[in-house]
Image 1: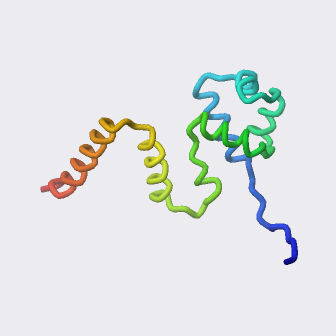
Image 2 (image 1 turned 60 degrees about the vertical axis):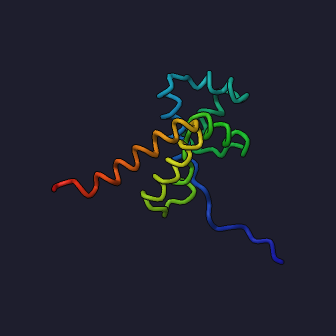
Length: 119
């Protein structure tokens, strides 16, 4: 089997900007983030601004730390509906059983309300 390089390259810049935005939203500096992930500040800056690819371990830490969905970056052709369902599913996984029952009730109320809108 011939070893061929893929022509597809992953552009990390959009993900880097999402990390930067999430970091800033949490009021965290690049220096603080660098300390948390065990890298220097310059490396964080390169990931955020220049699209430098982090290691898989660092990528995982950043995505989970900031609750970032990576689907839109890895699967840009995914519909907004599919992406929203995946994001909701991720959020649901963090809820308790009681919280899930509450969400289920809200969803059922929304579905029931569909038929009464505009009546």
